[in-house]
Image (cartoon, rainbow, N blue to C red; front, side):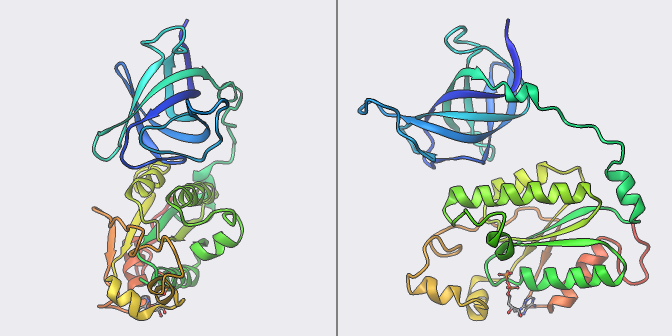
Length: 312
Ligand code: ADP
């Protein structure tokens, strides 16, 4: 009898030109089933030249490895060894449908069956009503020095002045605590954003208006973050400052260091920034100062001076 679960271990043959990243979401296709799939852990690499499997944290083109995979919805499957049809799948790029990998399921992960979502009596809506606010995530994205932290700070001040309960998750601060084990490789950037998005989700569930200030350079991770929230809850704001201006401002001296070759994987230099295609708001910091930008956001939320606050 086939298993139905949302987590399993599988062997993956990776064909994608870009390496596989643990924490990134891909599209899994098995027969007629199509489900978003996230690699939660790359367990080890299968290398025919070695006697023993090799531990790894990424999978490059042509490599084969064993991974744990978590799905957005349950999949009907069987171990590949028992049923090659129900046990095999393809992984596709969620942006363009390109075939990235072929997968062979080893077995389901029992933890998926044993962890249940605890139903609580006091829920998001009740918490939001108690605070007379509509919880949401204001997700600021843009280059280093574009003005995210400065604008985030102004938004929070304006929210506070109108009696709203908010919390600001700031890139640098989070990297001192929750994410201090992460660096700036692509894999670490993906994991950085996954943890921030999950944290924002908990805070939103607590009834807060959450502001996040992270470069969040990759479209796939911003889409993943958005997918954690209900329609209307995730407000993506592109702080659209040209890189020349960011470099001129250089508030933390990072552009200078990147030019001198002292920092690797710096966004805009040797690490890409993928601009949002369709953000809820785009902010031009050459045209308006940070407090004017914050007012634009407040008006979007309809919490501006004289506006009626939207109820939860
Ligand atoms: P980020 O968080 O995106 O890395 P910061 O907010 O730390 O950027 O730095 C932006 C710098 O640009 C600050 O020194 C800020 O004073 C300056 N700045 C100049 N004009 C603006 C503007 N219109 N909006 C936001 N920041 C501005």
